Image (cartoon, rainbow, N blue to C red; front, side, top):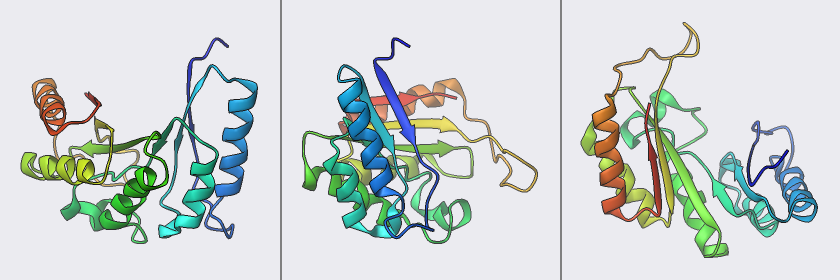
Length: 178
């Protein structure tokens, strides 16, 4: 297929004792063996804070370990599954660098659900303080009438401002756009 970068994502597997970590690690190891030239990013759940499960995935040596904080701290309970938390997500991301400083860590934030610019900046700072290297920001779109409504559509100019802020905070890479 000519790939040079591959992103794996997972459905949260709470039905498995390790949250699916062993399966994810096996998939990463297989990809690294069969396609050594391809960079592998894995987007993981928080494993409900189980750092042993996270270590299983990290031991497979993905190039990038991604876990999304999703939104600013104030909106966590409104936006995310009640089992997830801002602090737990930051702890997962911090553990990446504690395990292996050469693995890049990445998080994503969706905007348009009622956050303020100041809260986004705080989320940037909190993420960098916990070793996050890469951040992406995107517009929230309501997937169905049962989901949260879009509070507002963020302008392209605001996305550019967020990108500049992220770069000032020290992220190695910032992708910011609708």
